Image 1: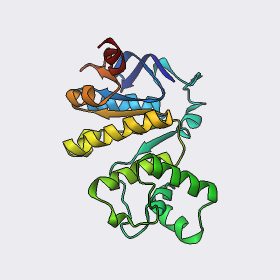
Image 2: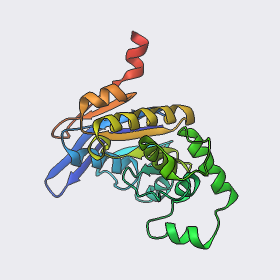
Image 3: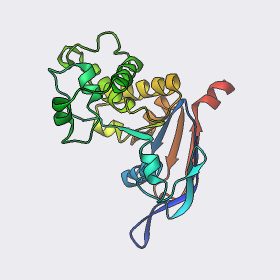
Image 4: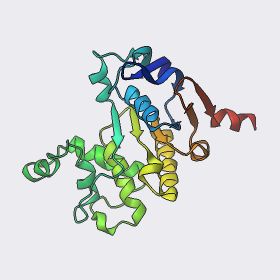
Length: 235
């Protein structure tokens, strides 16, 4: 559970990206963050990922407040989906999923040592979670177009995170692919009981694809929330 209690994040000395923003993010659901200002969306996700500590208010993750002292702890529990991360077409799904080291070290690590059995099991489980568990030894080049994005999501899941983030999905991908990725993230969050959070620009897409939507207004001075599950129960 993530609780956002009246946070404010400043942009310089006089301007604010957001103020008095409140939200509650539960496991097992996809939460989408939408705002007319890209800076506000990025700042909100940075606060959840422990990259920025709000100047006002507080973020709590599973009962632990996000501070400068706990930010490193949070970053180890959050995995970000790199929507445009390069894949090696001639290498296997398993190999590409195991490539979760920082850029620059991925290829070198793959060449000089074999992954630990626990890492291989985590990667295989991640591929199973995104519907690619049938033949983890096949090369990426054998996948249909949608499969490459599934591998990128599996790469983030292989870290066994508590929270999964995806940034600017509808800006990074064409409309149909963006909706497919959000649908997959929603399914993964439910199956694995993860907190899945993504930022989008299109408010219509957010309300169609998300379980829970946090809408920041144009000035970042307030937030409103839409919960799909509440509306489904009411119906």
